[in-house]
Amino acid sequence: MRSFLYFLLFMVVAVMIVVLAAILGDEGAWYFAWLIGTTMIVLVSAAGGAMLDATEDQLARRQGGDPAGHG
Amino acid sequence: MINGTVVDLSRLQFAATALYHFLFVPLTLGMSFLLAAMETVYVTTGRPIYRQMAMFWGRLFMINFALGVATGLTMEFQFGTNWSFYSSFVGDIFGAPLAIEGLMAFFMESTFIGLMVFGWHRLSKGQHLAVTWLVALASNLSALWILVANGFMQDPQGAAFDPTTMRMHLTSFQDLIFSPDAQSKFVHTSIAGYVTGAIFVAGVSAYYLLRKRHVDLAKRSFRMAVLFGVLATIGVVTLGDALGFVDAKAQPTKLAAMEGLWKTEEAPLPLNLIAFPSQAKQRNYGAVQIPAVLSLLETHSLYGTVPAIDALERQAARQVEDGIPAVQALEALSRNPQDPAALAQFDAHREDLGYGFLVQRYAPDLARVTPAEIRQAAKDSIPPVAAVFWSFRVMVGLGLAMLAFFVLATLYSLRNRVQEKTWLLKLALWMIPLPFLADEAGWLVAELGRQPWTVYGVLPTWMSASTHSVGYMAFSLIGFVVLYSTFIAIEMYLMVRTIRLGPAEPGGPRDRESAPRPMLSGRPFAAAPQVAKRED
Image (cartoon, rainbow over all chains, first blue to last red; front, side, top):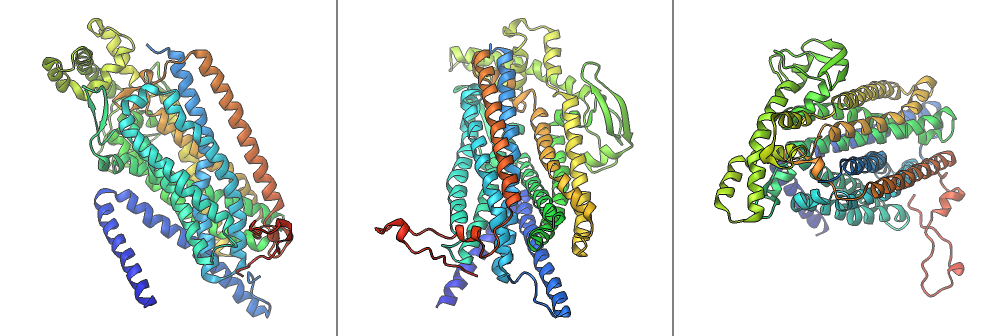
């Protein structure tokens, strides 16, 4: 039941995104570009942090130490 | 007629408060999404270092936000106190986005900021992340509505003047929010804020790396900031080009001033890289030009051309002549709103009503207007060229310098060689003022380039102000400058103090201090157990 409710929630979100994208695509291409661009910038930045962790973990494993950033 | 000195002082007061306010806003816009990025990594990887990062940068964000709100409040009041004719003339259109901005800033943004700051120990990881994303979204949506309002001032869409009520009415809310100027201005400004946030985080992280303090936090913050910044800077340059493209159609006088274009030339037009424009002589001194580049930039074609100031002045003179009967019809309608002849005359000339107002400054009685007064009004339709030209070059130059820095910093960060490059870290520290200067220069281009209008082509600045005394305006201007300078000093002090203190180490005394205090629920406060619920 919980999975079904989540499915419904995400479907509603997906439909809203499709409708929003269709409207913005016609009328507000720059707003649409901002939404997509901002999401991309944030995710690339987050991936950069995760990549740094992965590199340091790999280095620490090679040297037999504790992976960094685990507190 | 309103005293010219009062108009100038009203402009100066708004410019001063806006310039101060605009030192805080871009940092809020940019840091909010950087915080969202850091917390996203914390929630997805579970590494406490990212929680520490989000909390530390969140503290700096809060200092900036609090002072930003304090400086922004008075600007909205100024529309009523210092620009009452403007408010009456376009309030039906301008009021809606301004009210939505107020709701966004004070209800959505402030509520979620409260949850973000005080919710670390009270919300689950996922809930807190959602709140941080909503803060970022609300901050930027708040800016959206201000820029929709500003977009209307630059290119009035979705409204029409009603001669029976003597003010502008909203005809299409959709046209107002989807106007190309509002859209391109919002994306350009918002992403300029991302660049500001990225430079700030990279610069402060570089300070820690140089001093070998909080290294784990600093190198992760630096990496995330430079990746965020390099993409944002590419975006801001691209969207700046789009804004120029939009302005070429909507505000040709601004574009001509930005490029120092005095005389109409055949395509391809050269770009004035450096020049010293003289408004009196209508020419540039010491111009250094790059052939054909301006045509490519402004029309995206080698064969495209844009009107120069000489052609725009001739066109403005024709519009002034056409606008005079519209103003005369309004005068007749103010005596008899049902006068059919006056209504017909107004409808025939309504497009150029604003230009009729422009010449009224020199000829209050339009029946006696002279050709010299028409020529003078046409000359007035051109913004201050040297100021717009150089503000534009400062903005673009600093933007390109930041792009070069971010490309270099990203390269070294991805190779994990940032800590070896002390020159790069020192450079990052010195880069901190640059985006703030670029933001201010960009604001000057937008607002000085709109002159002599408060609403482009519709309402001249000279008739938009309130009828205060010179003494009142000078006194309140000095008051604002002193107050806002104090705010800047407080911000600098708090920022520097927080940065020197550094982030709270996990489990350290300052981290424990941020744990929740027990609620006053019938028990003596001091007797309540000091237990913090930790997620990590």
